[in-house]
Length: 394
Image (cartoon, rainbow, N blue to C red):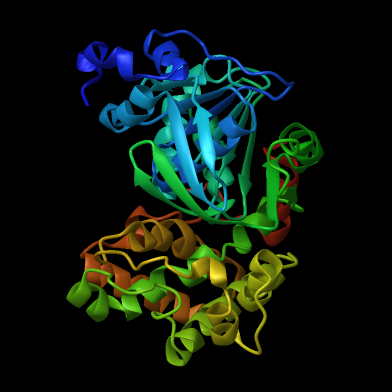
């Protein structure tokens, strides 16, 4: 609905609807910080609704203004599934300065392809003491945002961080509704610099209790399980996806013993990269147990026992973020890092090549290479120092 025509429906609204439409700030109790959630898609709606249900003041940003009309009309977000209720949103806007104004914590819940342009758009509006947290960072997302801010000459004392994965398995079901299939048990978080992790957790855990301390952003980046579960699975199921428009359970039907073996090979290369950098990590099978209590003798068995994946349908086509996001923002930086530190990644590189061919796009050219991240030529020791300290000389 066009927001300029909304006044004729005021009599149908709740008090929260009317307050938001009139531009009045709907406040809540408690000592929680003001949150800005960036992105009104599957994850952004779930995150904003969750925080609002916790009693937080939430300001929601989305680049496309039309997608916010549902939230503005109803005054908030309706959650269903594992979390149920209505959360009132204080502000929903496509004006990034307005969305960030007064917010202590900026939660970026967008595809990782938006991290670089969003960092540039946020840069002039950042203020001392703000926290920018990528949910998730995929591979080296926080480092990429830090690099953009350095290139822009930003002097504000801003803490940039990332989570290892997204807090929810969720899907948007309407313009102001999200269905949460499962809340993950534990989501590691890390910051640049790493010594700010406890401060950020102290602030967030009262409303986001699943967030836990990661060692540093190398750990959160190289524990990127989406890199293992998304692109290869989509490409290996390309025929089925294109024939049915994704009319099957993505994980439980799309992952067979054969495809699971490919995912395990990808995962093995990720683990080797982590070891080369001196980073402790878990396998994808172990991650399923820690995150969803799913056990199994191998990856195939563990996935089949993950109830949270039941009902999650496959993408309707292969032009999907599982490929155009996860290949350049997850797999390319892993392969690029491998070339720099002497770890071979043939299966990861094969998936990059397949994706580039199917999408007719050279993902090496647009992805997060060591050069684009400002890490080219750095030794393992220098990369580790940057991840702990956050910036040169810090």
